Image (cartoon, rainbow, N blue to C red; front, side, top):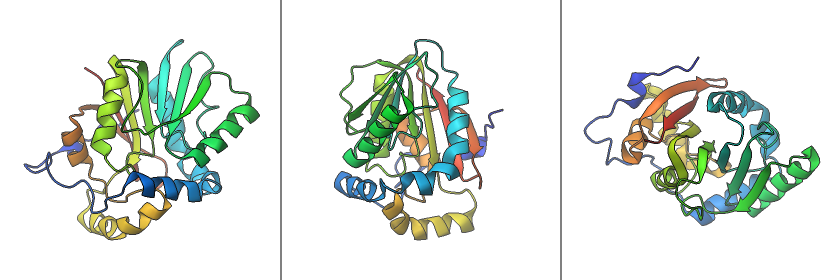
Length: 228
């Protein structure tokens, strides 16, 4: 059962304008990071983050014929999890990560997934193209999270789902300060440790229908929204 925590989205007067992280990154930096970790990504982030992936797929409630966009498909860990009755497009900015994803698609015999190299902040799809737009473990590393979500919203059909699985800054002050301190270092392994959830939601103009803690330790959040 999804857990909605109102305090997760409580915004102060500065939420709509404050910096989302102490760490700034550019696309070329992100590409270099993921090119470096492409070979070891499945070992380091595969089992640890897998429970969250399974819950996300369950919450999507995928219907026959649904068109799904996975933003940041990476090495394709999710490709064999999708039901055969849907159509999946997976995009990623890293060519080396996509190579791994292509290998996985072939090895698993997956026929309902297509892969494309693309910048999540500049999607080439038409408006209202997908029933579900899903970003697993990617929002905290892109250079402009708000722009990426705006693109996700644009290509999602009215009434469709926008699903974000990600780590966000803790609400516990002591932990939050630690996350801000280590964020300039964690970006080198693929994520900002201090992305601010209330600020992100306010600036993205997202209104979640649920926020759920997933995986263990419970530092990962599954945020589900409906496009109005």
